[in-house]
Amino acid sequence: MRIFLASCLSLLLIGCGQAANKSAPQSAPQSSSAQNIDAIALVSGKNAVGHRDFIGAKKVLPQVFSGMEEDFYCGCSYHGKDVDFASCGYVPRKNANRASRIEWEHVVPAWALGHQRQCWQNGGRKNCSSNDKTFSAMEGDLNNLVPAVGEVNGDRGNLSYGAWTRNPQPMYGQCKTIVDFKGDRVQPREEVRGRAARISLYMHRRYGLRISDQDKKLWCAWAKSYPVDAWERKRDQRIVALQGEGNPLVSDPAQLAEACR
Image (cartoon, rainbow, N blue to C red; front, side, top):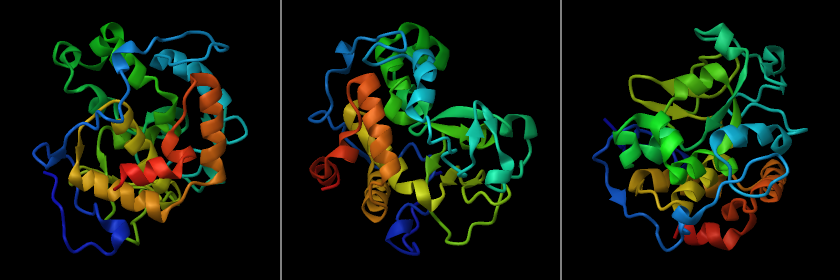
């Protein structure tokens, strides 16, 4: 159950008790900001400009992160698909094999993108990826994809973000991201909270997804407390070049202010 604890440590801990409560208050889809997602045409090939499905997105993501090869959740350097444990003091929690490779993580989980769609009810993610072009556009949106240590990506799954402690008990060596399996929540390291928040807000606005009041409060608090940095700007510029559109909440402060009003 998603529980909201009023006794948060500070503004940064607004979402300290949230997890996966399906009955939490939901804001209506932000349709005024969402474009006609059914009209998105998918492209293929590394030189094409436009939205791709997830398979196509994975082919160009190395270009997006060229020279910025750092895992999202732990700050580990990587080369190709190989994680450099020594660069970040990473110690596998359980699955050393999966921890050794980089995977492409959906900041807004694929489950959140598709579980309310008919294709998901009829066959889950695989069916949506194969038969729903709208889902494919969401699943392959470059703005929502970041490199992550495979083990952490697997542990995160479709759990919601939250923040509940300033002194996290390490789970992966020196990595500061932690997972609360009992509470169904993930606390990302501080360095990426603003990035995660702006990505999450973008995806919900761009595709008209429902957003809980608790999540919106948390993301907006993070977006304000952790401003856009050079990494985000460079990534956004590269995504624009490949996809034709980036995240306006990164490039336009006025749109971020409007999203969080």
